[in-house]
Length: 443
Image (cartoon, rainbow, N blue to C red; front, top):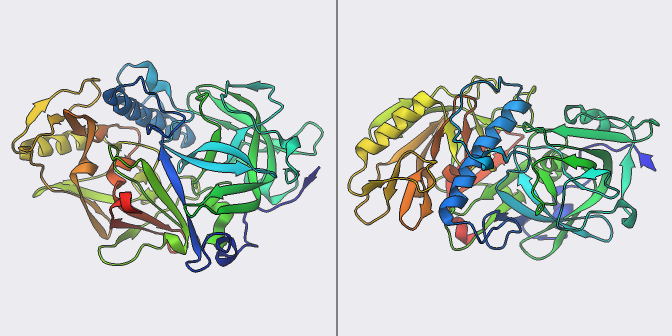
């Protein structure tokens, strides 16, 4: 049975949603678990720390290929890409996981939280052609709240960017998403209750959330993953579906890569407001032709007294760089990377240069007490963001730290290492993005 449904959950105001969570604050927060932490189903105890970081870098390269495919950029353009089989991990290469449940009664799913995707989807029974998944598959027939969506619905029409179409009998809306490595997911568009696990321990149930129920999914998906929760700007994403119910606001605070506490935080409604001393804001630039991505305008980066102008990608209207929580490294054009790397190397004092055990990173040091790094500032339009050593260098292992920037002439991305220990707030109605230096291990 199908029925019409709109994508926006505007029938819920922020206070009604939060009544299940925190009636006093009018907001709620959820945990984000890094994929390489011990609490993650994707954690591989056999990998060395250097291998994990190298794979994260390679996933960043895979992310560029996937985004370029979505943006219809010329994939033959030059990109630095070490030869490694892990570089093809593009289909589910987000870095943070979120615990959700689907259906009534709730069926638990560990999904990738992805600001570079829109649609929310999971593998479903019956699976005509699916990749191997270790966890049980969601069975729509076991849920009393599952409803397929009709072809005439606003939801189906709004999913045209996800390849929406009609079933052979014309009764059910279907979706299809292809990734840059030929991985794909396709199946039925449905309305279902999605439940988030809040940090307070109280569940946040979101009835009639539009999801993709995948019956044909293949490619480089990990068997440890169960689905994707899209957090991009397109109409099918969780953020867009919540819409006015969260006041168009969300934020996150990501702990450093090597932190003892691996859990980061994502906030909605009033919990997502970024305010107080030290807040810097820059325009959040939208491109109607590419609604998934969040663009910023980066004007320059300073290393000590040397200011390096940034041109970036000629996409996103006046925006020249994508901010993305699912990309580890910050990816910049080759010429800019050379200037940045040279400036950092010239101004570093003490310490000892060394090589990356994985051969992926080009500028690395031994992190002893003699190593002194220059101040580095990212000059966004209207916001000069002073980065810390944890934003500039990534710890490969106990004896090696490497510059967390990477040369790439296809697409510029401001990655999650540069965002760590900042409260990053998205205010979609005001079209602003805010930075506030924060100890994210205490959020």
